[in-house]
Amino acid sequence: MIKTLHKWGLKSDYMYTAGLASIGLAFASWAASNRYEAQGLERADRWGIFVGEWAPTFFAMGVALRMEEIRDRATEDVSRARDEMRERAPRSAAMR
Image 1 (cartoon, one colour):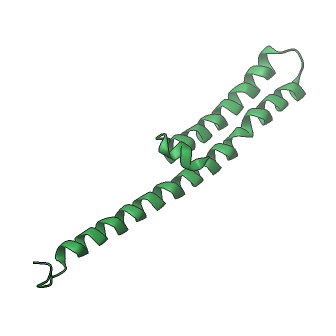
Image 2 (cartoon, one colour; image 1 turned 30 degrees about the vertical axis):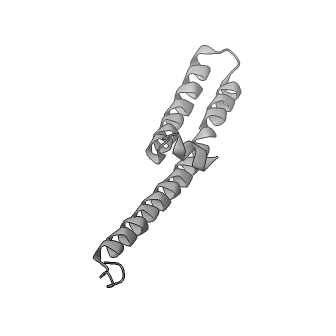
């Protein structure tokens, strides 16, 4: 799943931003529920906890995507180094 998201262009920074946003949204949903609903503090707490549970998921996905980005960079570096070595390698008389 992470490889597919990475191929689609989803970046780890987007997931980290979503995690931070969900923390703010958890507080906002708690405050809104506490202020505008008549069910009381318990209901507000449930809303805050429900939305707050999204943050660790977003952060974990951000870490997994970061690992994919690092793997891609390492693969590109190895490929680039291999190409450079081929260009610098002396050609034998049979190849000329």
